[in-house]
Length: 369
Image (cartoon, rainbow, N blue to C red; front, side, top):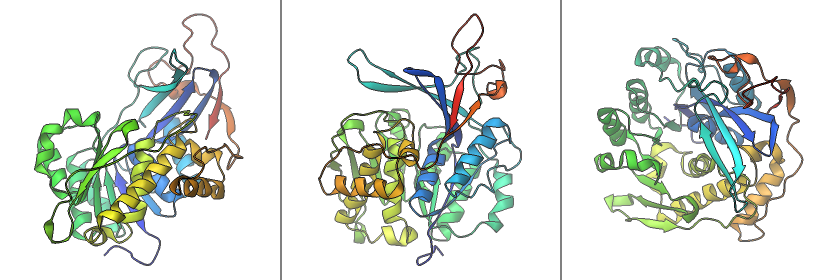
């Protein structure tokens, strides 16, 4: 059964990657950190006081070692990140720039800026590999997954049977049969309105306890199953007003983690008894975390740039409707600097942050956050 009195546990399988953050205004500096939806949600939960256990098949290449080192700094358990058969660690480049009006924006690059080859992408853990580790897994309060595969769906079913709150946050449809199975298993379903376009016709096959659709700057809407099977219908929550936005990447991950930190401690049995006011309070907390992180570059930038007590104080101010401008505080730990290794792009063997087609590439300063 899920733990109720001790530190809550979150286990997850899905997208764990190396984030490479490049700011067009500082092209000689590259920030490297663990990322991916599953990686971010579990790391944020660890930051909020949970035990987090991501499951993956990351090779111990440079990207994989960097991801593991970063996760360990946030006390994430990485023992199950290298299951067999191992695969190259996914790499995602986030490029920050400004629009003509001066607003900050980001885009994701899935190919190497130097040679144009596709960077390593997500590879699901085979069902057989997950079956081997399942007997050794501790009971969890929350099980999170963001990609459908036979192994992920089977694992979600196993955790559900022992009382874990199963959370499904799809970014794409994938196999329709597996997607429908995932919808029937999950207790919390969360997705963005933009990404839902690829699987909207499948959503009718699920009946979760809580369904959340994020709407970008317009906030979110949700519907939940109240006690005795009555649905609350769709209800909307506006977002926080944010000044001086640096980067909106990772907002959904912060919102998910904040929500789960409030409603997931008692597993699925606790959510079934929640009222609308409690659900809205949890969602609002998640929105506040997301809004605060928008002040910083990177999907989890606030974790590296703010002391924990400052972070908590700023969140309280936002929830109380007080001053909403989060100022950057001293970094939690200094960034290490190193030269970006040539092997980060497996295809061209050159630093992926260099866009210069001719001449000698500049010496690239990197920051492993």
